[in-house]
Length: 67
Image (cartoon, rainbow, N blue to C red; front, side):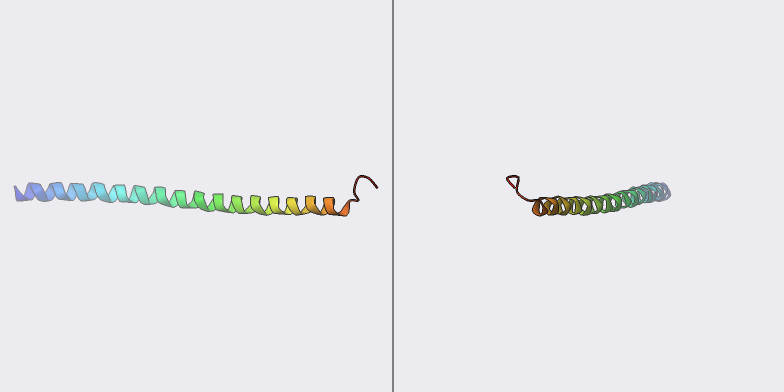
């Protein structure tokens, strides 16, 4: 019975190792996706900020409509 129990524990350990490797692969992929999303958000923020500043400069440089 002890040998059978040992075999069962080895099988469980092997399954857990496979599961751990699969989960590690998924976490790595998700981290890469998060990194891309952060870069995209940063780029969008910079573009919106630049656009906002350009629009404000145009408004400031224009004379009022009654002139």
